[in-house]
Figure 1 (cartoon, rainbow, N blue to C red):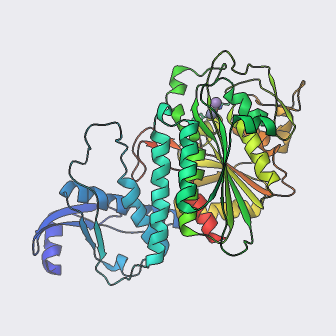
Figure 2: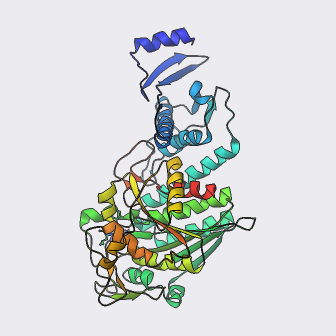
Figure 3: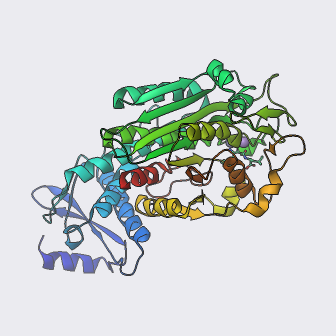
Amino acid sequence: LSGGALKSRVNREKFEGGHQQTLSLPVKLKSLANLLVVGWDIKGKELFEELAAFRKLGHTIYEEARRGRTGKVALAGDLFADLNDSALCALWEGVMLGAYRFERYKRSSSSGKFTGISELKIVSGLKVPAAKMKECDSFCRATLLARDLINLPAADCTPTTLRDLALSIARKGKLKCTVFDRSKLKKMGAGGLLGVAQGSEEPPYLLKLVYRPAREPKKVVALVGKGVTFDSGGLSIKPAGGMETMKCDMSGAAAVLSAMQAVAELKPEVEVRAYVPTTENMINGLAMRPGDVLRAMSGKTIEVLNTDAEGRLILADALHMAGQDKADVIIDLATLTGACVVAMGDTYAALFASDDGLARDLQAASVVAGERLWRMPLAPEYRELIKSSVADIKNTGGRSGGAITAALFLQEFVDTKKTHWAHLDIAGPAFLDSDRGHLRKGGTGFGVRTLLRYLMSL
Ligand code: BES
Ligand code: MN
Ligand code: ZN
C-alpha cells in the first residue's frame, strides 16, 4: 500500500488523526491484513500522560488483534523509530495487562481460539533492548499474578494458599522463606495478628521472604502487605454491600508477594524482604470483641473498638518485625480504609511517608509505572484521636480523617527515627468494578510495578 493510496483511503474515511483516534482498514498485502491507523499527539503532555497513551495504544493494538483473530502485529511509523525504554515497556504493558481475563471459573474462554499476540515486530528499525524487555515482562507477569490472587474467591485463596505461594516463589527464585504459624506467633507475642485470627477457622501466618543480592547490599528494603483474605468486619460486621468485594482485602499481600517473584528474577542490587501477615477477619464464638485489649508484638496494648479496623492490627505486628530486623526503608501496602476510597476514588492511592526523599522516590517510580499516588499528611494534630483511656492506643479514630488516623496508628509501630517508612493505602485502586483500558474489572495488581520500579532504581 503506497503512501498516496493510504492517504486517499484515510481521507475517504474522514479520519482526522486526532490523538488516539483509530481507523481500521482491511488491506491486501502478500496476504490479507488489517491496517490500524492511530492518531498521535502528545505535545506538552506530562510523562505520566505520555506513558498512559502508550499503554492505551498497546491495549488498542491487543483489542484489534483479538478482533482480527491474529497473533502477528507489526508496528510502523516515526513514533516507533526511537522509543525510549519506558515508552516501549508502557506499550507492552498495555498489551499484556489489557489481555488479562480472569476466567478460571468459566467453562469456556471469552477469547475463543485467540491466544494473544505472539509476534510484535517494529518495522522502523528500532532495536528492542532485550534486557529491558525481560524486565518489563517480569513486571507484567508479577502484576498478573497479583490480579489472579486478588480475583480468587476467598474460599480458594486462604492464608494457607498464600503460605504455599510464598514457599513456591521462594523455591523457584532461590529466596529464603520463613513461615510463622500460630504457635510461633504466640511465642513472639503477635497479639494483633492473633487477635484478628481468633474468629476464623483458617490458621493465620506471618510470611517472610528474603532476597539477598550477590554483592553486599547498600540498602535493605522491607515490604509489608496486608493479607486479609476475607474481611467480614468481624463482630463489627459489614453490611452486605460492603462485604461483596472483600476478597480483595489481601491486595497489599498480593502486590508484595508478586513483587518478590519479579525481584527474584531481576536481581536488584538491594536486599529486599517481604513481610505478609495473613488471616481472615471472621466471626465465631472465639472472635475478638469490641472493647477487647490486645497486646501487639511491640508490647503496646491496643483497645479494639471496631473489629472491622483489623488491617492495622495485623500490620502493627508485621511492621514491628520488619523494624526489629533492621531495614533502612519500610514500605507497606494495604487496602486499609474506606475513608481513603472516599477521599481519593479508585484511581489514586494515598501515600503517607515519614521521609520526603522516600516520598519523592516512590512518586517518581509510580509515574513510570502508571500508578497514581498522592501524598497525604501524617498529621500530628490527629494523634490524640487514637488515644485510648484503657490501653496505649485504640484502633479507631472516628469517621473524619479516617485514612490519616489509620496511618498514624501504623506509625506507632515504626521507629521513624531509625527507618524511612512509607504507607500506601491502596483501598481504591486495588479493585475496580468495571474494565478501564489495560486495567480490568476486579483486582488490578496496583502497587506491583511501582514497587519494582522503585527497587530497580536503587
Ligand atoms: N478492608 C477495609 C477497608 C476497605 C474498604 C478496603 C473498602 C477496600 C474497599 C478495612 O479493613 C476496613 O474495614 N476499614 C474500616 C475502618 C473503620 C472501621 C475505622 C473502614 O474503612 O470502614
Ligand atoms: Mn475491615
Ligand atoms: Zn480490611
